[in-house]
Length: 153
Image (cartoon, rainbow, N blue to C red; front, side, top):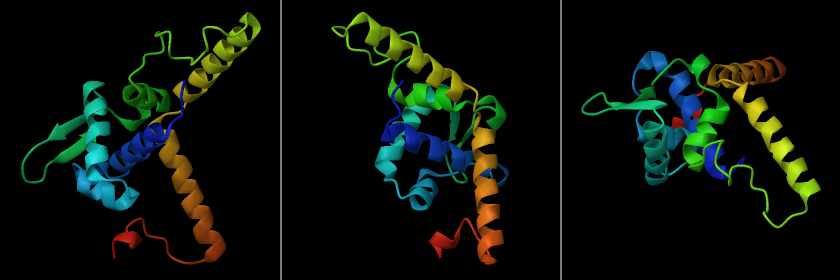
């Protein structure tokens, strides 16, 4: 399993959708502004997320993207799988060198499996809750209001 910048961006973009689900579909332009990621790059990521049926796109006025299923049913591992182009069953998935010695291959295969299992146990809802806890703790420490939209002003 490869934890790339692409994966990280996909996870944060999906968190945006989950955080704003009550406001309706979220545009890529809004995610771009909030996360400082280019719209064209987000289009590429969302093509993979759509293909994996993690998001649904809505066209027209008021359109944008929304999660295809509840945040508590989407795991971080699913998001990584969607944008990496690999399934956990493909030989490249574990990123093991074919010519490596058998002990190293076994070690990295087991480690990769454990990482996948760990990330498959964390849902998008869990990740959002973790972020909310961090923001709440920061507010208590600094005693200043924190707004998720302060960067837009």
